[in-house]
Length: 487
Image (cartoon, rainbow, N blue to C red; front, top):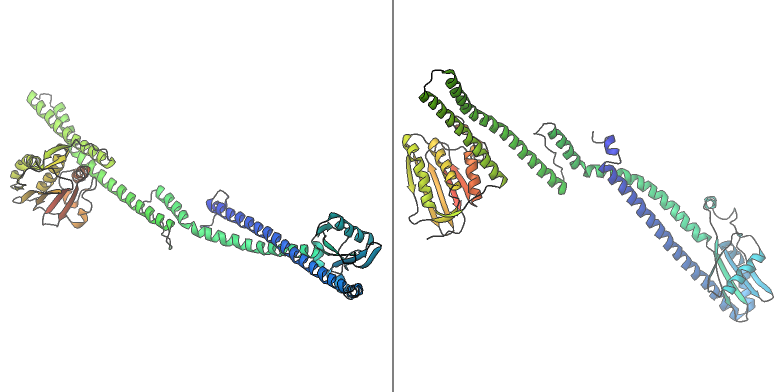
């Protein structure tokens, strides 16, 4: 099952991602709530100030008309202001002319005079004063408001009227605090619900997003256990993880192909080594067993041993050369050489072998010398391998044509035979290391020739291609795409 205790561990990437998302969500939520409360408080206070100033201006205009009109208005609006929570005090030097105390405040005349006096002494337009002795009555706000632990603060301003009297108006911040705390309480409840849903949704989507990685881990464990045919299920969506999955599967296919080919090729190499080793051992045992052998017979036995040892050395040398080529460490000693002459010398080495099989070796070289930078040892080795294969797989009476075509920017060497040809499936693999086609299974060889040929050709910066059909011969085409120097 995908959901396991291991993936619930805080050490798992999925759990860490989920925890990080939760912490980020709640930290962001706290910032949002904090800033929202701050700006709400400022907005409520601004509106409260505007309301107080509007009342103060209205009462001032009434006072300009008549003191009696102001007093009458204050009397008429007494109950309204009292229930709304507005504190209002109009006083002269000898005492208060009028005072309205909110219904949910304790009536304390000394406290009221102290509030106004403190404000006047401060000289500020607005004063904020805590009023711990003024507490909410049990009948004013709803019952749930009493659990909010409000610290009431009074916002006060005053104005000196035309006759020298002072009119002060104050309103409590309790309503503002009440609204903000109720807002925060409701927001926290919503965030708690949203947070729980976010955790579940985040866990689900994190698990879905990381599923390709988990599949990759499980597939890697399966491959490590020996199942090379295991593959990572490809996700339905596109993106980096889907691309990683495809590349990983391609890598697994190459690894499986390489290991399979290596096992098959090592079997072939072991088979090819077994014959010279058996002959070598037999020659030694026969020489030891023949106590009356003459010096000539012993010499023949040693020659047989040397010949078989040379075959083994050739195999090991080919393997080392191929390893250098694959690692990119093959060293070339390039010289300016005539390709016509070099190819001619390679053909002369195999003319006798071709005559023994009654194969005609034709040469179609360029008329003028063709010079290019090449290794005078490695390149003949590659051409010799191609000629050897052509003779080996061409039946008696056939012919082989070696051509050289010189053009301004390319030199082409072609070796064409009338042999058994190469199947389409084998053409895709004949240049692989240690690969031997079906038709070469009965022939002597180690499966290193064409692989080494390609490595040498590519080390020269050239390219080699094969064109072939079963029973219609083969053509190996080498193209040196380099500037050519003609002398």
